[in-house]
Image (tube, rainbow, N blue to C red; front, side, top):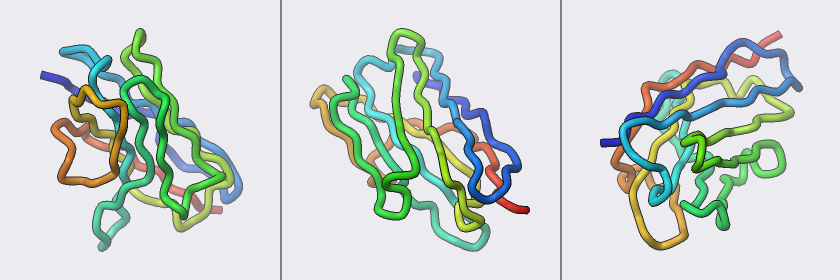
Amino acid sequence: QLQLVESGGGLVQPGGSLRLSCAASGSSLDYAYIGWFRQAPGKDREGISCISRRGTYTYYAEFVKGRFTMSRDNGMKIAYLQMNSLEPEDTAVYYCAARNQLKDTCTTGIGSYEYWGQGTQVTVSS
C-alpha cells in the first residue's frame, strides 16, 4: 500500500515560486505514474500535470504550461512540482496521486488514480 504526503505549500506573492513535494512510503514508486491536482474553494478538483514511472513522459494542463515543472526521484521515493510565476488564480489545495502501471505513460484523469495524499494549501496573494 502506497502512502503519499505532500509538503511545501504556503503563502506566496503573485509572481513568486513554490516547490511542492510528494513523498511516498509503504511501497516502491518505480511502477507508479504520479499526478498533481488542485482544488480551489467551490470548484471541482482539476488535473495539473503528470509524470510517467520512468519520468520519460510528462503532461501539463494548458493553464500551467511554461510555469510549472514536474519531476521525480524514484530512488528517494519523491516527486516534485516546481511552480513559478504564481498567480492568485493558482490558490488551491494541491494534491499528489499515484497509480501503478507498467506502461511508461500517465494521465491526469482523476478516476485513474489509486492513491492520494492529504493535500497542501497554496495561497497566492499580496
